[in-house]
Length: 142
Image 1 (cartoon, one colour):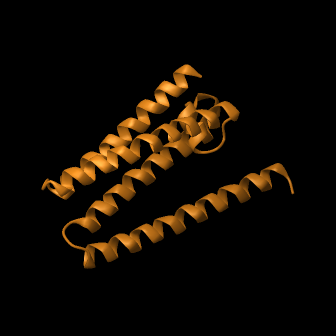
Image 2 (cartoon, one colour):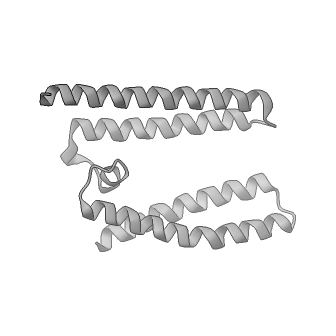
């Protein structure tokens, strides 16, 4: 098989996987909208849209100019070298170490009477912030 044939096959597989994931997310989101309490379905669908847009932007940047992609984009899409993979692995290890006590603190705060939705939202944002800071620090030190 020629290089062009392989490239076309890879693109077809990527598009197929993306469409399957999109269909699954829409189905789960619509089920949650119909049967879950509150705005859970809408929140799930909006989160899925944001996540898919981020994946599309990373894929577009990698396909257009691979040399201009960031360390995070190369590591997350597994197209980078060993250093990129090591940076992501170490940053995720730091996130894993910090997530456990953060989750414990969140559970205690909820047990003391704070609104669970607010505490879990703050927990999510705190973990995202820890992951971003850990990635930046590990990347800078490597």
